[in-house]
Length: 111
Image 1 (tube, helix red, strand yellow):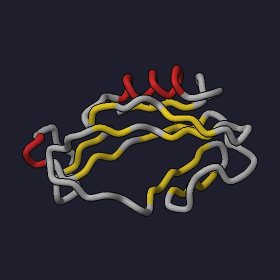
Image 2 (tube, helix red, strand yellow; image 1 turned 90 degrees about the horizontal axis):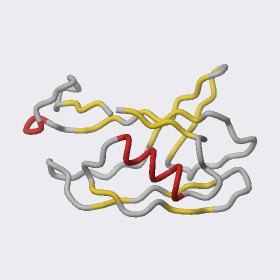
Image 3 (spheres, one colour; image 1 turned 45 degrees about the horizontal axis):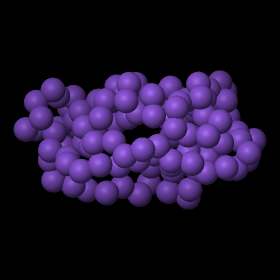
Image 4 (cartoon, one colour; image 1 turned 60 degrees about the vertical axis):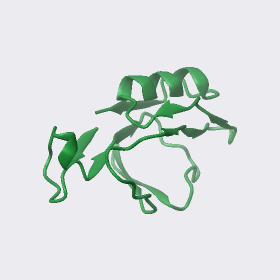
């Protein structure tokens, strides 16, 4: 995860935080579309770019909780448990690996 200020400059000062950028790596591309229309996965050789076109704006610092919706290669949908808005990448990775059906070791999340 990278924290950016209003000028898109990386910062560690939470009082200047305007947005967070998360990097997600898919270890295996699924043969069919697997994301909702507001998330676009563009394959380029052995890499892919993931873009979210629909975002929610919140006041900083973020509060509350969220969960991750997972869809495996069989089309089965599952969810992680709820995580605090400031959950680190280790927590997100652990929850996907242990709480999403057939998703163990399928994605990598880092800050």
